Length: 203
Image (cartoon, rainbow, N blue to C red; front, side, top):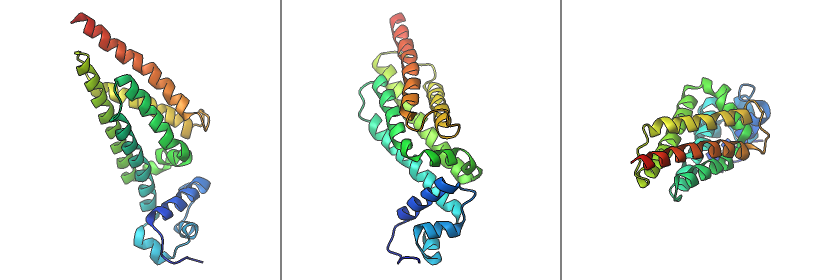
């Protein structure tokens, strides 16, 4: 029985995530989403006009939360090395509880043009944040990095592969995302820092 419409869209999203995790996006019907949220058809459509709209909102909530957490964390760091380390910790903390949703977002959900745009915006935002960190670090050391954006995309790409291995391929253990991301960060950081130091030494 549907409960009174004294609820928020967040409650529908929470219920939808549980259903998508259990059944997959493609196998879930609108009726099942409504039943899981315990809302009437009228109340549901007042918030979301389709199953895809629910998925888009879920992905945007997850990625928006990741971007905000990363921006806040990076605004407080004092070095490039600390920024990279803290950045991957925040990524693991944000994505970790949503493994199946991450997998759906990177696979079947990508058939949605709006989801694809959300993922694209999230990656571009992370690259921009990281690029700013690299440029600030280079300025503080009086060196020039030839292409901070390319370095940023390379790093985000390496992190993306680890997220895929964790969420989609399940090669990385359920609770091991942080360790996988940290290993990438610790491989990447000395290469960038070392390059900056060597350039500084030639000046």
